[in-house]
Image 1 (cartoon, one colour):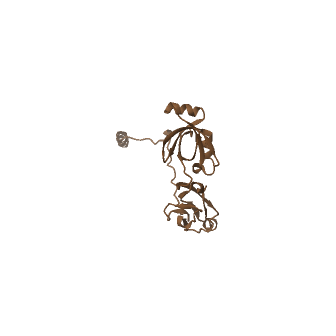
Image 2 (cartoon, rainbow, N blue to C red; image 1 turned 30 degrees about the vertical axis):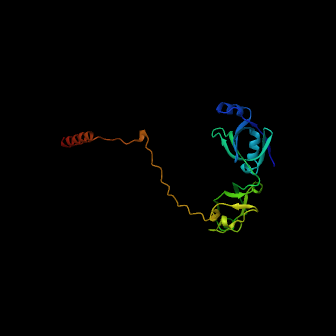
Image 3 (tube, helix red, strand yellow; image 1 turned 60 degrees about the horizontal axis):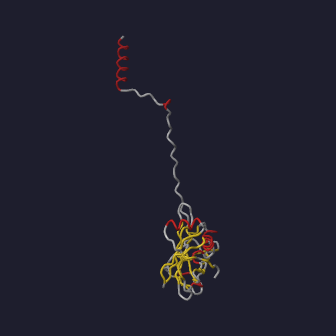
Length: 225
């Protein structure tokens, strides 16, 4: 195994105990297994972050030791504080190296599509992860997909890919991984000129109906004179 992590069982549970652990640079965790109850553990935060930042990320199989025992485990789930991005909890799952596991692995595109390079199209990366089944030691870091031969309106589906040795794809074979599309012409939007704003000083004088009648009467009397 590439990583080996030392751990301790947690005796004190609850929010306050977890908060104290985080202040010490540790993180609370739970270990789950097929034939065991959930085991509360304490891990060093830097160890988990190192594993998460590795190429295999959450699919990394590593050893965790506690109470004179050592288990092969994977990260099942992590909890991140949405405000501080701080790692606040980890769930681990015990792994049997001789039993199949189902995991998600990232898709990595390579090459430059003909449709994008020479035909004015664009590459649409549709499925960035694939679900697979294999023995733990056969989990690939990624699934490579070469898009070099793709023309406009062509795509690569899961059924077009050959899985790595010992790996089985479990998604729908018709799942689109990537395609090359043609940009749609953007409709020209006619610019509407901004309405002229009349300042208070330039506001036209509004003549009321009464004032208008008075002016008309004055004009009539002047004509008679």
